Image 1: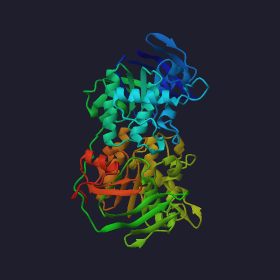
Image 2: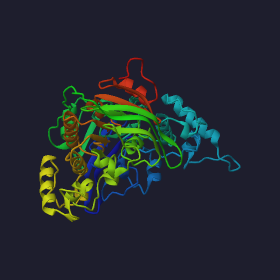
Image 3: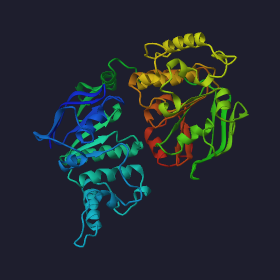
Length: 505
């Protein structure tokens, strides 16, 4: 089935998310839609899938203009979508999820689960998915859950499949398996739209690449294009993709964590007997598929987890139970994984956000009075140093782009004397150019002797920054290995496999 999008425009108030976008996907083609977070890729696909109504333009399938009032119309026309966050019910079986919304019944009105099981088995056999129709979704690894999403779409005769950031929750091995599935689907004649911001993956599997920047198509490329060429199209300028760093000059052990456990609000053990050490001048990268305890680990280090046991010592001082303010005042810098939720106050100015950690003490506050002149000068200097693209220090943070918001968080934490930097997903949702800058600043902090803990689900980022890599799986440490450990080894560890003897460091 041939898919054509002609002049698609979608507005949200004054924001033009899609600006007259044209896109053609041929039958049996894998067409990658490449762009930074916020470029408009997912919005465009949500228009195609009937989740949004376009303000202009038209969708054609095999030359016929379509009018989708909702996802049901899109599915009926042969379009399926595999969302980044799976649309599955955990307590249902595979077969029950596949038939949900498209239920068939037997003569007496009883759900025909046998037909659903047969459909799952037939599609699994055809594409080599190996999925048990009677397995509960909650018991399946995320890679298999994604296969269920694909089976669900194919069971409704989807001829065009949209994959929205499909590798975000996969290990490297699961990513490779997904690429193989996409190729098999292509060989069967399915047209695929592959939404991503990952250059490595798009070059590996795409037949053609369309690049979107700020809601507009800025060009088309072949998969033979280099990473540098694609990054330049995404950002609009040349970008340095390699992180340059010298061998670490290791100092004394600074952060020593022993037997750390954390229990969530329902009594589930989310960090399980974790012990590790970070030396001065070292970057320890924590890798793993999202949801394996990394978030709770960083929160425990910052005193944000209420039910924590074990020991967290920084330069010999116990921090467990110390409280967030005391931990920050002890010299811990924190870049949270969700800057909007935990890192910034959107309605505050840039200047006000830059002093959030130090709003009760000199130089910004004396005798209970805000020193506005001191704050304004500090903000101007910091904005320049960290290349924050803003008109003035009094501009509201919520008016900045995602990359510039992240720079505000980083600037605040790195503009004070640190004894430890904890950075969780430090480049999530920022453009390639901002990634380049943020990585340089993190390496600079390490070179100044600051111990650094970086938590990232992006293996490229882990490989670029890490002196050592600690992999977590289901709340435990699978192993700690040197930076430069091969991706396939890290992928196996991310799936829970303990590294071979001698790999730990």
